Image 1 (tube, helix red, strand yellow):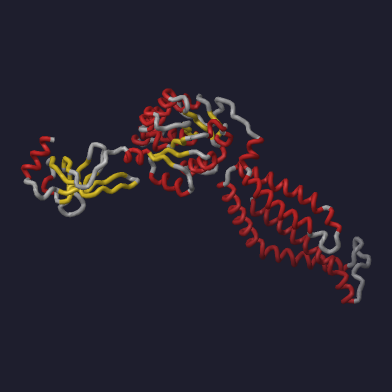
Image 2 (image 1 turned 180 degrees about the vertical axis):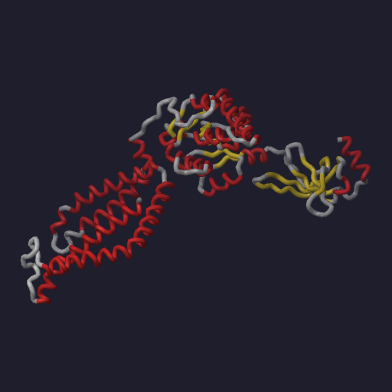
Length: 400
């Protein structure tokens, strides 16, 4: 349907263009032929006039038939490109930019009107001013978007809910105060911690909150709540268990801590991926993301967003192991390389023991050689002490 409308519009434009060009060329043609084409005839026009009109219509219709597919392809491609760019931009930024363009055009008309009567260049000055001031207005408005939006600040009334129909548990959560993320009050925008799906399902953040090491508001975006709802309705047993566990955890957080807020974020509805929505919301509200997702951590950090990774915190509070220190470990299985054995500390830290393969299934004393720390976790490399008898190692391990 869209192609037919575009085809008809292009055909009409080209036909009218052909008639206008013909009217402009008729005086030159009359002079060249030595015949007054504008003499009276059928309906007030000469037959040659009608002939030229029909020829111009047929010619430009043929031109339109040839170039219309290319024009339509270009227009559709350009419109999709513009739509994709606008879809990624927050609605608030688009509105603010339009306000800037409108102000720029008004100023251009006010300033350009006195100059429009100048000879030669007068007619071009308003056009140039309109382009320059419209672009300048959009640029200035985008930089001052927060100040402009502050003039139109409206707080969402408590209890305004989305049109989704969640189950009973999610519906109970929705009965809490829902805040519009695009217009967070100043007191709510300070020290916001955006919780993602993974950290809610993980649940360790509750213990961190009890210690008092994490300050500020805990903000749970509504799209994270929706994702937990989808997980809890999944046919997969593991996903369903994770989703219900996350919903239970949010309910517990709301009971234990008064500064847990669920926010509605209509500005990023066009973005499909939950992580991308979270990054965009954090950028718009100047908030901090709390997660244990390694990939989300990297993406947010690249875009200059501060991230608190629960796994990094867990690694930071693990006991410090010094190279050369001896410790006791139970060798559980073989390692990747020849002669290696694998053991684990109580906190899950992996220990790679060189030369420990023959002691698998035993608890022995080992000597730490090095420690590798990454954002994914800590890995300890150790070896079996050379100057110890096997019985001494096993006996020492039993004593410990």
